[in-house]
Length: 211
Image 1 (cartoon, rainbow, N blue to C red):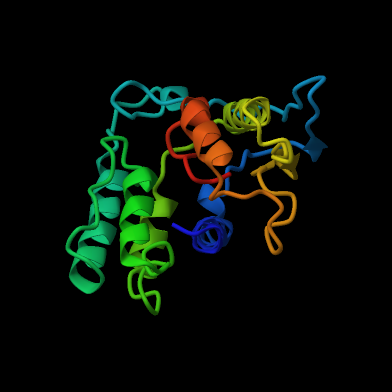
Image 2: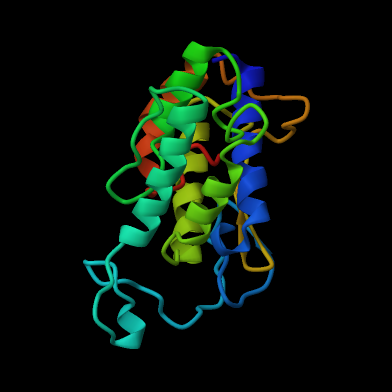
């Protein structure tokens, strides 16, 4: 995948995230903060939304409901993409999150960004938004710390301009290229690709491809 296509792919994903507040890596409260290598910014903790092993909301003491609603909605999106775009669109992970490593590889093979945008004319955007709205609550602080560790790892592996994520109004703003509209980080370089491989384990499930 070319640097331009990869940048469009991430931009498309972020645009969809911003359009669905439930998935915009938000927390119920917390002010703006920026990161630095000297410390880790934090957000005010919202009431616990941690889930049980089976996906139930532990803070409410209710019976586990599982993660089937999110997974099933994601499968409807996948089925739409298979019907309207390509039969090779990959299944979501067992967690319900899309497998962006496989999606990016498929997109590279197709040579365009129709996949990241939910179809040529957004034919499957409705299904994608539905799935995104059903994603289980995320821990904003953990997401931020995961992205921060990833950014530091990328710099340590030779991508010196890779920026840290930021906390703003309770949201996590991904890091990465300091100037996405006129890229300063060559995502097609061997150094970048090697760093991505070395640092991919730093990102929590559902964050892959977001920075």
